[in-house]
Length: 180
Image (tube, rainbow, N blue to C red; front, side, top):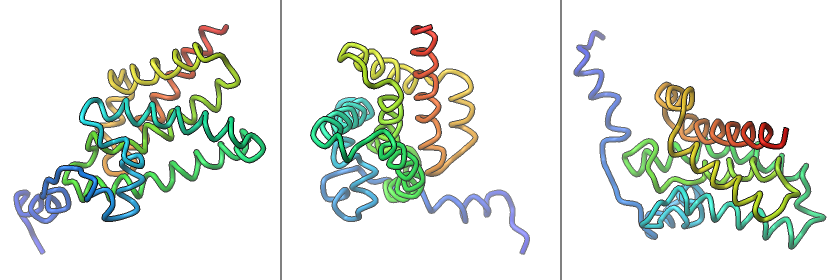
């Protein structure tokens, strides 16, 4: 079957054609939406990515402090790896349902990435955690090379997740250089 480029776009485009606004109703429609929207933190009307990061930071500290025997570094590593793998699917599903592949309300990627940063910098002071969170947000928002190029190259759930993991890597690199 031969198609013109326009016809091919029409076949591919419908997956993201309908644009929806994220809402509590949307979030509760599907468990993937619930997690992709960071258990509701992505519904923040102001800087949802930062809200998701802060919520991830809070979750990490509360779970680690409350149940240190359960939330060990090894367990966090497994949670982060599984969270990334599952995140590819849930972020893709939420993006398709919202009609925007990397909608700002999708913050699961920020949560997984900040957990990675915190796992690798703790134990540390509250001030050091604040610096880590601020550096992560800076790299996530500015997207220095090669983050922006990789974000443009990879679409869907993998694209949503990988740019934040790279921002976490840049954050950890800066912290390592600072400590050195």
